[in-house]
Length: 429
Image (cartoon, rainbow, N blue to C red):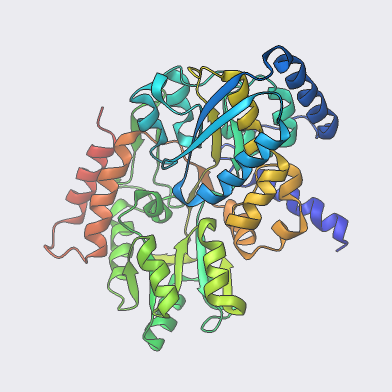
């Protein structure tokens, strides 16, 4: 395969990554982004000409682990627009997953620019926290269609795509596994048990637990009201029933090699050598490379045994976005900063520093991104992923159910009863 064709192919595949169960809408072809960027910059210069030397105070929210990166990006922004304003830009750590709640507690006092997970977009738009992106056509042409869809409500773009990598897959230590070994959960657990090692997955997180139900014909999703959920995970008919999945999870939990743990347990286990495989995401790619070196491996999620057959594990997919607070007192400059944080150069920098997959089309097609084991694994898993669109009542009931499964159902409660309770919670109004 030629290098040029290979880059085209991977870029095309990346365009479908995390684009959702219904598929991403096809956007127009990539335009002359350099010219568009120059025009945008000229517009900013013209727009800000009458505001030279004004004091511009902005607050930026981002993930705690992104602090060093974001400070570097903010410094380059201030250098780019030096002389057009007196900038005072403050960074504050704020979890991307909790951004919506923090922001909506007091919109007027919230950050001017903020990073957030795409599943919060609808609620933020409904609350009036986000306005349509001014130069939407340019942003759409510069980013992957799936990322554009995730940043849009209908056909209206409300945020700037930042990453196209908020999914999960399997990390493994090549010292113990050949590529063919990581195709099934059974084989992974068998090898780990023989070596006295552990395989991890966080069953306290409903986000990961979706992996077991997603490709079984059992369904969960958001109702038309955009708030409540539907769910058939407790179904008692059909080819695969809810209790079949529960029994499959219990079978995995009974393995001495399996450990349900949060991220800290996975990483500490990789570091001390007690964990040789685990389900996680690209945010740990840099750490995995540092810890395992040449033994660092990544692959799509394995299959697992359910009803004496192999079921491919599914995954939720998602994107990270940059939003601009509609109540910002410096909305024009906040918009320029959001665009700067999410531009091609800084998405490439984010990949190099944090190992996060770009949403920008050009950055996604770069050689360094294509050579990443984590991104390659994410691409492979994308065929079995679904854009996360779930109401708030999903998380706690699933976590409670799966945590009990991970413990081996110690009280011996009826599985159907537990499934019914979980679904009742998921679908509660």
